[in-house]
Picture (cartoon, rainbow, N blue to C red):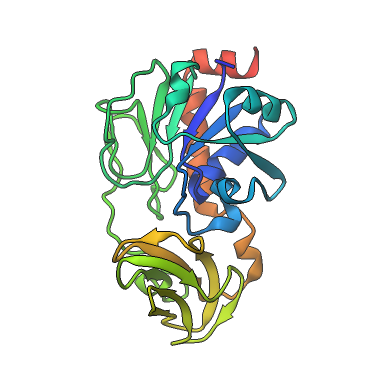
Length: 270
């Protein structure tokens, strides 16, 4: 079990990475929070924490409680998800690659005590300082590119534009409290329609569209936190398919891994 990859975080981008690695035969484990805050839950393996088992496209992930169960799940051709935000699995495993896909958008909070190749996704990481390589996560010409020295483009806090809508696409908590969605992923909504409440305060849609993402019912949120995503394209298929952004980032991750001869030899030729 040492010749594997650990992915920290199971959101939509990390799940896109996991799917591409899984499809080419790489064994991996996803480490998640006990209460994931994922928005695009229909394409995120973090949802296994709430449901026990989920399927994204053709790949299934199962919540496990220990590494013995994780081995069993891997042998079944599925991806194990374990609640382990502190990466305690590193005390028992020596993974070849550790991917931080949590998208915290700020520098890592601690130095990882591991010999694994560390790949950081998006802003906050500095290749050559706190990780071996960074993969760009900002949409545009550099999306998915590998950075061997330096950092990804800084976070602007503005979502990518879709049909003329950008910052309006993202739903934010109006105050701290408990999230109570009134719509589910895939529902069509109209402008000014109530999508959710946070402790009684309504969250409205800024335009006619479709709910592409919504955080889990009952989680505690803080003011300004991203809790949902409205898509003006109104195409239900977009709720079930891994995004082109996630796939591009996954390609960058594979490039980093393939550049390391030790990882290449060990991961595919045990």
